[in-house]
Length: 225
Image (cartoon, rainbow, N blue to C red; front, side):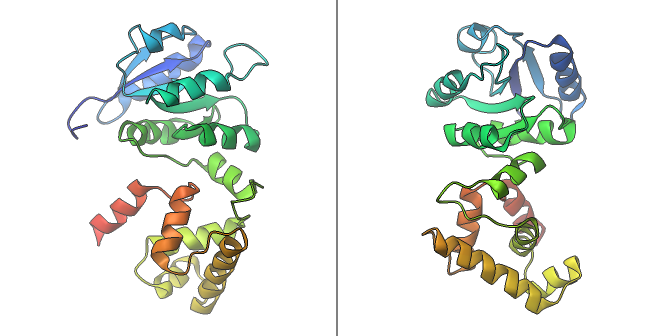
């Protein structure tokens, strides 16, 4: 979509206070985001006012105790760009939603500083990784994802957006040799799960696949250089 086009989102949530809060955040965003409140009416996302919205903000559990993974899959399969906005904080649920194709998973503890940029990223068809989702990726025990420590992820992300390991060392107040050590550990962990990353570009690709960094973050860095 063109940079000057109004982004529209439809929110499916059975709590009026949540929808009202998200509506206020979207209205005060710069530029503003158009929000359609579908309440708990899933039909409005398919054939109603929200059918043409750029982004779907989806409450995973409209019926207490029954996370609706099937509806999430249906939305993704038809090409809708979905953000799951849920009260669930369990890592396994967040990972499952992303594996099903959600572009972002936010808990309802995460406010406009994450939901608004997540909507903008989703409208571009890009994933957005919140702190809770980043933690879920780190804790994930799926066979093809390495278990990285928080510090390893921090060093990796800093390296991706820096032109040298020396700059990373200065930013994180550690030795350049320590930066090398962390990156080597990450390479070994990826190799151990059968996803070798011998070069920086290959490691960037792995991190993008696993949601450790987004294209938007990388593009912003390239634009500032």
